[in-house]
Image (tube, rainbow, N blue to C red; front, top):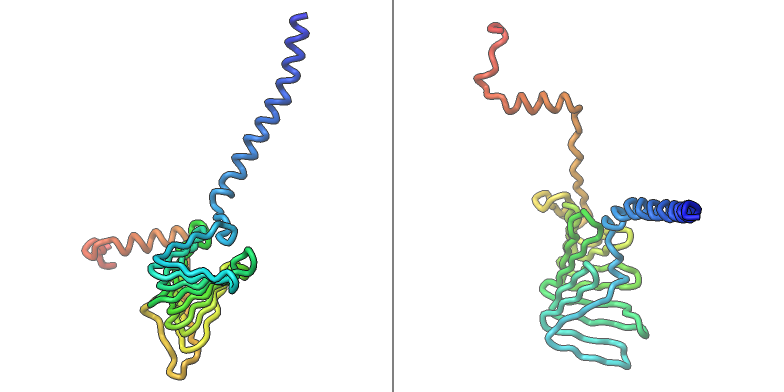
Length: 218
């Protein structure tokens, strides 16, 4: 009788252990993917700090002034004045003004923070894009975009620029054409050498000149 009960408990215990093993394996597989991804900022709560605030419920607007800081997830906007337009219970648009107004956001884990500034920043929360106006500049992954107006789509990570501007891979290479046309300067990637060839090149570069003997002495 005791042996039968032991076998019964063993038969019930094995499926439970198999299930726990599968759940543990699933957790190990999915955890790295979750850790590498950032939550969508537009789904996060928005916080606004300022010295003063003026609310017009009928117009659906709020005006913040004095050291204004807007944060939403990794998104951060700093300005001297911020106008918030609401459509019912949802925020439709935020207009930041400063000298300049500043923007930064961590678009993707493992990538540099995207930064921008302009005399005015229009943040469209529903469309998930920003428009920089007046001495606008945006820097992303080492690329610099500067001009009179820049529109940045956060979802697709695309940039549209217009007016007298320059686009380059570094600040030092930034140029503007005399007629105000858009100019794009893209640095080509460095070619990758085979591992053995790269080792030889590195060794020859680090070898002292006196260690290299002339051909007639070899």
